[in-house]
Length: 205
Image 1: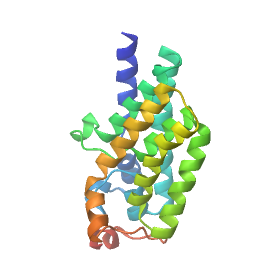
Image 2: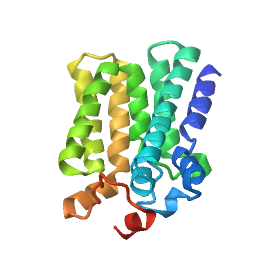
Image 3: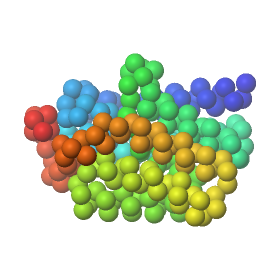
């Protein structure tokens, strides 16, 4: 019963559509109808600017933190926090409220590893920032950062539950970026703009 409580609560927390809520409150728009149509922080950044994008990033990461917290409080250490974190990521990726069409789990996964392995979070964030800075491809930065997570966990000799999370969560990210990988290979992937774009500009790209 306790495991079911963690799964239910973590999934509900993860499935909160932060980007849609912020888009509606900030500018009265549904971000799914603008830019790439994704409900992640990157699309919010592209459509509404850095401020709303940062808010969504923090809120999505908080969902991962909450999922880990539920697992930690109700199940203790070991597999509990990992279960809560994974379910929160799954809730973000496949939210019941949006017909199971959610984001890509990067920010929510970041919140999880922030709780589980803070030192690795710092390294992964630096990897992501460097890749995005030099390439301007957020998707590429997300994929490389995600793939680095389980490798760093092995390097730092993390526990088996944490390593399992790294492997599963990084697989989630790569799978959710399938379309982006195709566009990266054929040179049609969108690059991030460092200046604020209007919704119409983003849609034209």
